[in-house]
Amino acid sequence: MTTSDSTDPSPTTPVARLAMVTLDCADPGPVADFWAEVLGWDKAYGDESYAMLTGPSHALGFGKVEGWQPPAWPDTAGAKQFHLDLAVEDIAAAERRCVELGATVPDEQPADHEEGTWRVLRDPAGHLFCLTEAKSWG
Image 1 (tube, rainbow, N blue to C red):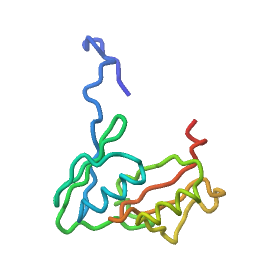
Image 2 (spheres, helix red, strand yellow):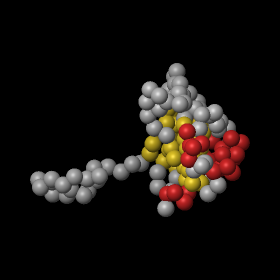
Image 3 (spheres, rainbow, N blue to C red):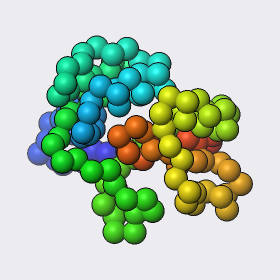
Image 4 (tube, rainbow, N blue to C red):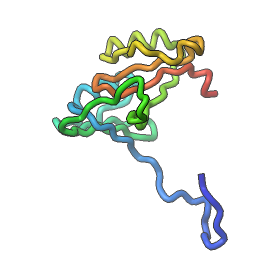
């Protein structure tokens, strides 16, 4: 969102564009392989301390951090910080495929009361992500 300032000659010009999101993890290779399969993106780079996927307009990176620990779920303390929402046509089928690729499904599913419109999963490193109905995104 941009704000208008009479002294700013170009208030609608963004300062930057999002080029990549990088996720911390203990072992970048398997996590990058998982997300490459889930998103259908190309693995552009990978070594033992970093991996990068390239998508249609963004990149997703994975950086090795010694001692990295996945966030708790449920996250009552607010330490989760972020998660990815993925739009899918069939939540059950997408969940099965993600699990085949190495995801896990936490027992606690807060969407159970919302008639299954989304599911919480963890990638192989423990990052939380949600599968959501594509029709909900327009």
